[in-house]
Length: 429
Image (cartoon, rainbow, N blue to C red; front, side, top):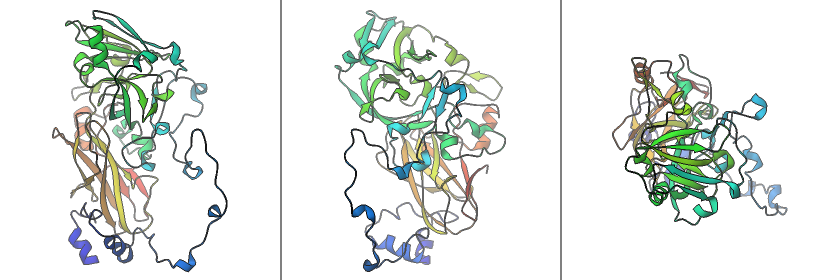
């Protein structure tokens, strides 16, 4: 079996061919488990030793109106939450536990949250959306009225522009995939095309921008190019099939696939068409890019291609030498992920990962690659390439372009260092 593994190697330090798990026949996995060890978990079992557990001997729990996760999944929660900062009122964020999830969809209760002045408690019967400004007919929509319009659905990620900002620090920040990268999530959104509503209002040819405003106490407001509004923008009412959660904009939010998170204005109450950007406080005081000469570049809206390995990662340590699956997520605000490459030797050699279908534009894509860990120290990295040909940059390249004072649009390659004892930590490589 060792010789077979050697034939399957595609890169240094034990990375195996991405198709090894896809081949027909269960014999491969069984053989791998017996000869190489599936992370030390595989062991022969005899039928007569099978114990009948207590939960198979008594009736189970009764039906519930709205189910909750198993009590054994209590650690799979958003966070880290502030220690009663501001008395629980005001700005804050709650991050998605990326390292505990799989697939591409984020459950509603785990979708990341970022609010600038808390979550408003909105009665949908009293909420209205106003479309005005450079239009022929200003219009007001109730939630009930919008629910009569033709609905459209799409799977899209939303990522805070400040996600991963701690990666710019001079020394590696301690943390997990959640605390370092957890301000990104992906869901199926359902609602009404904004282009349809703007067409009904009648767009003045002079309108080149719009400003979207939320109904929260911060009156979060962002300017959006009219071209994006007429392309794939949506007034979303549903998230993964149910009404949007209050923390994500109930009863309606703006969805701008691929754009900075806070441009996807939550608790949407007003859309005003303008000749120029509104230059609101939320787009002039933050959410802009530093460039090499120390100036600030505004209106860089799409989030560039990015990836992160979620298993193994800090807190998801190695337990014994043997066969593992390296898994993670990749996304791009410019379209589909075309390729993800993985290295286990700090970038000396790279191997293509398998992309889990469906691979959708401006959505999270799950990637996977078999790895035979020999118990020696290793450095794991992933890099994403999107359909435009853009390649996720190294940390050195991004710091050289933006300096160490940057805070937004951080998409540099993350390095996880695996120690000989199996502990995984964030490192710079």
